[in-house]
Length: 222
Length: 222
DNA sequence: TCTGTTCTGTATCAATTGCTACACAGGCAC
DNA sequence: GTGCCTGTGTAGCAATTGATACAGAACAGA
Image (cartoon, rainbow over all chains, first blue to last red; front, side, top):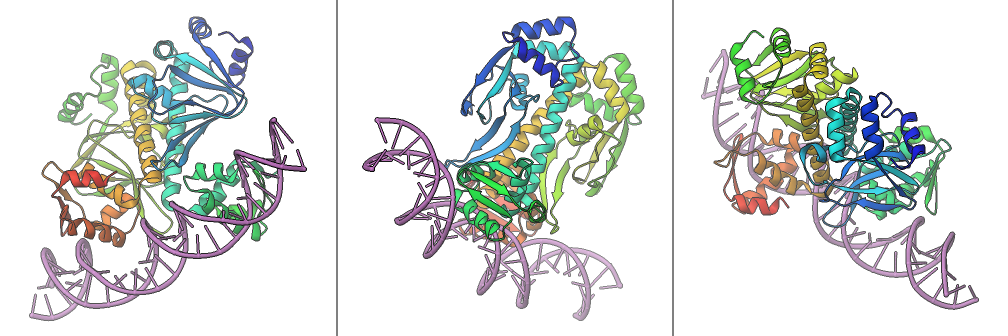
């Protein structure tokens, strides 16, 4: 790997700590680091997958696009997490089934497919990492699917704002992006936000939302 | 395992074929077989998971229940497949996050948690089985999530009937069950089915649907 | 400052879906 | 037969959501 700092960071994040010397060497030789200063799409649906993706810093967003062009966020990949879809593709020789977008200031390590499969066969820690990452994703997807089935858009919006806002209540995101995350349209989101503003539960600004009453929002989230 | 026929069946289904002698013995000693002659709920949300579930014959249905009481099918587990949620729970010591219902004439093998974790550590074939099963589930869930976001109920209904009907076009299922699978209500499903009947794409009967024009249905499925 | 772009605020109408209510048909037990 | 239960067919209204349209505010750059 060309970036020693990133190797250290990955260890700090709890990844690859228990590798054998052999495995570590394989990893450090094979891994490549990609930096994404600006938000940009880095994988398109149907792309071939070159390897396992590990987020070092920043965040990746995995989303689908409807025939009408609307986006819907499937899930996020945070620092220290592995892109499971890419793992799937590696293990099953599939094309990538969705789009991936890097948020600003994101660094991603790429472990070539062959390297990863070899590591998986020989390193218990990689086996556990893989299974655990898959497990977490399965739970997230099931939860999301359940929410889509059981909650209406207003509840999902409230939940999303709660989950994604910072400790100070700030959520920097345009209404269009918000709508994309929820698989809806900007106008509908704007209408729902309007009600929340009228009830003084949130304040809206250009490109940002500020939560004023966290508990009230939590009640609305069902 | 108390049922030699089932061990053979599982091998035929491609499971546990490549176990070491030691691993096979562990499995045969520890595995229990449960038979479900009638349709019944076998796991409730929040239950503790006693082990890994392998479907020998029949089918399991995993579903969630909304606060209002509506069911929504998350996915099915077919013969030769493992219940991944149970695996998740085993590896992460979690309670089961959904309900599971056995269809009539279903047999399920249960491998105690400890046995499975030991097998996972030592048997490459179990590692692969686990990762592959998780991968397949992730893809199914993502596909379902994408469909919920991008398709309307009519399209999802058409897709469901297509996927679940037999080769002769027969689908034995009440409209209520159909609605539960889709996370909707009977009345709405009945309304949509009515249109399909009027267009002579399907015929409806008590507890069954017969596909008359498979291609027309496929077009409607988006 | 001017201009073009992005984002927000708002209104209106259409389509979809959920909810309630009720009639009728088939099957089963008595 | 009679009554009961389950399942289907249908109607109508309410709520949610999507689609279209347009005006104005904030922002960036020339």
